[in-house]
Image 1 (cartoon, helix red, strand yellow):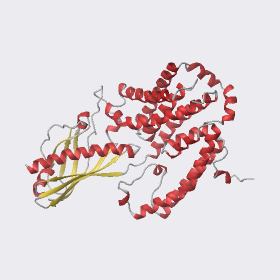
Image 2 (spheres, rainbow, N blue to C red; image 1 turned 180 degrees about the vertical axis):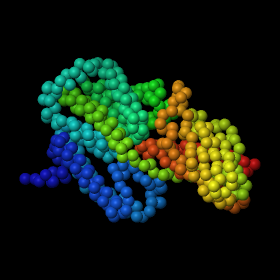
Image 3 (spheres, helix red, strand yellow; image 1 turned 90 degrees about the vertical axis):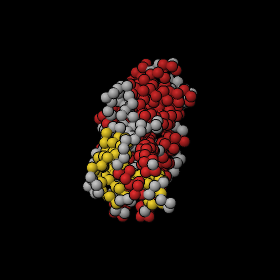
Length: 462
């Protein structure tokens, strides 16, 4: 007779949804407890649930301190047996639910693995699905609600999921003030999966049809958010690459669920739709309650100037009005620098960098002429003016989500009377997943730096 613990290590056989749920939650709680003890008692670091998705490192692997690398190596060693057990249990659960085993890859996607776990924990065993379906009054109602034709089911799937997506977006943005994993990863995945499940409820649809429906759902939801003054064009445009990818992934998973073509698919679809509809707001609320702190990032841009540091210094402390921007980025409404002025001299002076949306108030912290000028940020204007049919659109993310903390200009004397001028900004980006949104914020800050540095270069060389 095999022991229950031995069954945790083999991928053969099946496991029911109750055992899968209880075992998964228990193992995660145990792992988090071990990780927290190791982090706090051994390495003296703070640890929370969101550290599994968020890292505070802002440097490359070569610049990470050795002690931190030892900490990460220890966490990886602890995680290996838990990863193996999670994978084998997921394989057995997929087999029990009658789903393809290769869907186990979802186990490794951050945040989506939580939705995937909830989905598998709710889906009944394949052997019991047909019997339960015959006794389900909900299934009978849904049978009548969803058209049997391909066009009608596609339209209903796209419309229903769009309406739900708008409701969940309002909850996340205005109710929870949260621009996180649930909004940018979970919601588009939910759109793609749910629209396909409605489309293929009565009969299996082709992969092309399923992908088209998933893309139409995220496209219609994006246009609706702009049309009803929830978001602006540029913000939706920035989120679209990530959202489209997640919607396609959800559409592929929906295609796999519905392609079996038997009556059991209908209950699987109902379970999947219900879990995502209830589970996604719950995970968004959990994000808000835990309130992860965004890591502090540093962005540096440099330019070589054909003038000595003494000349360059005079133009970086304050500079006259810049010409109108030519870059496409700043023509979309994103804030750009116009001029800089300073009140006083030395430490304690206040520098004001005037942007298209207002002024950065920057008290001077280091005045080392002509080598280093460092300043804090006392206040800052909105990060952009939304491109929208509505002139007064001001979603919450315009303020307090992309925050500059301090900045500096560093001047290095080069041979031949030249200067290497480096402009640096330290900032926090409270959009998640940070790996995606930092691509946008880093790019924007580099362009802002470039506009200022090129102006200083022009003035100093002239």
